[in-house]
Each structure stands twice: as C-alpha cells, then as structure tokens.
Amino acid sequence: MMIGFFALSAVFAGGCSDVEEAVNKGGDTPCSDYLEDDADDRRVTVTKFLKEDGNGNEPAGTAVDAAIIAIDLLCSAQQNADTPIKDADLTGILTPK
Image 1 (cartoon, rainbow, N blue to C red):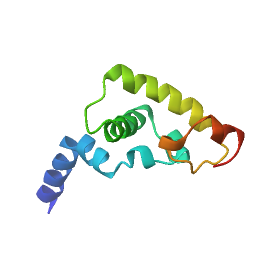
Image 2: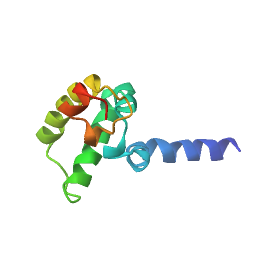
Image 3: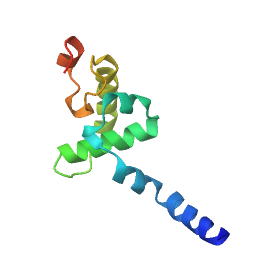
Image 4: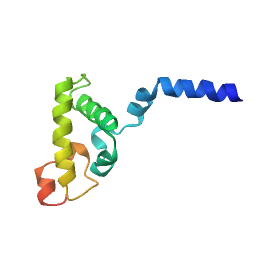
C-alpha cells in the first residue's frame, strides 16, 4: 500500500503543471479566485486564457507578463468579484457587471 502511495505521489508531482492546467478555468476564472492565487497559478491561468483567445497558439512570455499586470489591476478594482478575468475591464470598475 505504501508503494502505491509513493508511486501515485510521483505521478502527481511530475505532472503538476499538466494537472493544474487541465482543471484551470482560464478566461472563465472569476477575479476573486484569480486574486487569491499565487504568482505561479496566475501565470498558468493567464497563459491558458491567452491560448484560448489566440486560437490555441502559445503566447509569448512578454504577452503573458503584460496581461498579468493588466488583469491584476482590473480584477482588483472590479465591483463584482465574480467577473471572469476575460470580462474584467474599465466598465466593471465603474458599475458592477
């Protein structure tokens, strides 16, 4: 039983980013969840969102960095914390969406 546990742990440890990306909501992630994530999780979320938005192409690192900054600012000011990151914009700052 102990061997099975270690084998399962090794599988999950080796594929954490794959598992994380699979359960990640990408652009549908609510701002409230996004803001609770650490920097690595935010990067995975934004990368997935940009991939979805860009026809599946892998976004450039600088595009991800710029999007993280913009989403951080927009999500922190949204009046509705449940706004998905793909919909976070200046309108949501002035009136709830």
